[in-house]
Image (cartoon, rainbow over all chains, first blue to last red; front, side):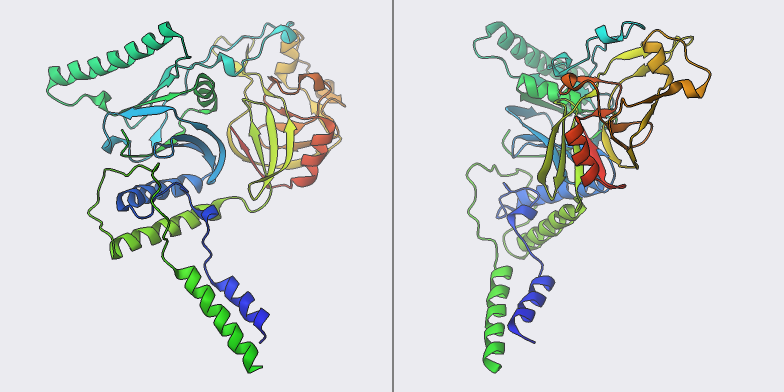
Length: 212
Length: 212
């Protein structure tokens, strides 16, 4: 057996490991909590990736929303910021009840060519996503720079949600069901892009982070 | 001969050392730590977690298609053929318009002209395809639906090739190349002649098509 054969045999039998194989390249492998969380998400993702469906991974550590299928990243978009009510309720696979509503144009027979198709700009940018698990994700678009009215409107909405949760908690003595809530802020384009890509019943996974 | 064997053993030993060395990547300052401490401390517990994470990452990586696959971005009207994550073909496409058309004589039913999202497989590869016009094609034009099947057949409108991916949806050519890049179809995916030929050549029956 010559040297080449030995090396070739070794290369074939030794498990390779590189950055390209890592599911989360930004993972701090020296932090047990981070590794445990990444492992939890991977266990869930493996079940989803084994089936012929696309799914969404919201990575709060990497501040990115990934649309994936078979473990392949189909598209990703950056998260500007996020906040969360309850950590525990973010675990598991969340099934989207219904994708955001879009106003579809109706074709008038005989005038097919005159109908405007829907496009990304028709999609909502400020919407709530409800999941079968009870989780709600509030998607808010980033206020344009200098747009004071828009900024105040978004802040008002966020405060209103918090006030509703607070009053509900006071009234019932129980934590509000809407505490299972994740608020994410993305650019207008990305909010519309996300709304476009979602389908009813789509699975969503969330990788949690300590950075609230 | 013994020198060669000795050299081979030395190289093998060095590779084993490198392959099994613990990960000593520095903690990324931008990577926040997860708050959910599991009680896992540094040492054997952490190493077991790291090993589990690496195993799961590898398993996820193995689910990715090893053969070329087709990726369709319906929001931006792009079609890609990828192999091992690398783009081998990048095409401007036309996908579903998202418009609706009422079914005559049925107040509760309508056609929705979306390109389906999710994972599909190339089920058929056709050359010189004939379009068998469905009911909606006549109704949209304000025409009556023919009773004779022969009146549905139309030659030359789908281009030189068509790749079927189920339920009557195809990747095919178009006479309306000026509309490429827009959401104008009834759910099929249109390409120009050159890109269509490229996709037809690269794809086989069974090639995955991921649409989002």
